[in-house]
Image 1 (cartoon, rainbow over the protein chains, first blue to last red):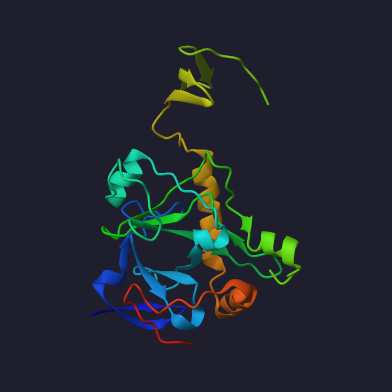
Image 2 (cartoon, rainbow over the protein chains, first blue to last red):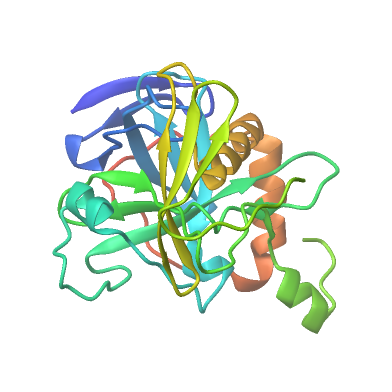
Length: 157
Length: 92
């Protein structure tokens, strides 16, 4: 059991198994290599990524498929190598990897999800990266619940 | 914006030290070779977009924003069980 400080959660006790390694960090946060993946029953389905090096740095994310049920992910050979996912292997969400869309929640603005650059975590390796999906037309600021709002009249999103 | 037509193998020069070669054109993809001084950053635009979005996202992680998000999710929250990860944090 190890311990880290965070601005959002206070002091956290964690097991090494909960640590996700970003060998190259994240764009704009290249030096941040280790994050804690936090899922709490009371904030489900939100997933938190808490930096182990910087208490003030955390991200809020949702499973990409929750934002867009038809979400498709493509990984390059290099990305598969980093995540330790076999090259010929068909990607199975939730089995060999997990895709998370980082959310941006700014006051007075719509909540958006980054579907262009999902955080992809290798299930076995616990290594992660932001995998740019340049070819599929996804946005860095996909409005959360846009479809639901259009179809079901929910406006709070 | 300056628009130039080039074929595979042809080159565009930018400023003193930057050389862009069209290596291959295949379908909707173009393979470029770029030669530039070490101090000239070369970045796929999407990486820059991701970087800017990451910075914006990192600012918004507050108790209030989590509350707002949960309210927004109300409709399609799934009852998923706690901590696949094994990390537990004190609830605020």
